[in-house]
Length: 116
Length: 111
Image (cartoon, rainbow over all chains, first blue to last red; front, side, top):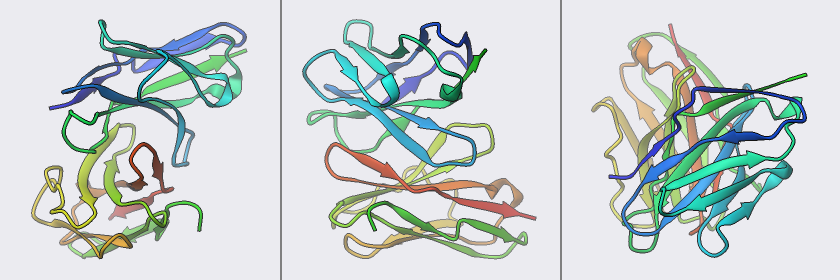
């Protein structure tokens, strides 16, 4: 069975500082990995995805994530945080072509709080 | 429309009543998913439709929950004899092979 772990319920960072939101995964075969963001009372918005190719993936709003196969991780990063980045972030995984099924499995989410 | 549309956006129902939630996926997206998000929690997979294949119902929490999809179009999630623990936001997503798009959800409150 595939699974995603987001070990931090909340991450606090000062505006202008770099941020990292951690994600590790377990899946059969090559993983397809995703990050979504959820603002209060809003639906999920796609940030970025890793399917294949370059391990460093760049996405919306200046976010990026690095796929690390040996550590089965896909941490979300941003060089300089903004107060407007404060939101709930979800990591998700599905198995690739050999992984069986299209079901997207989500982590429990990490609340990011960026303060002045 | 260009996105995934869900209706109603909010639903308040009395305990014991049945409710039906609707999802209009993006045209051409063959896969459709239902998730549940309880307050302050992550997304819980409910059911997944892929084309004409048998749906993956492994996430449905009880036999009070059911879902249908006609072809590659609209899906309805039905909850019978609602309970207070069913209160949550129900999210629908549709996907092509690589991309998933979520609707804004239906906020269900059982009183």
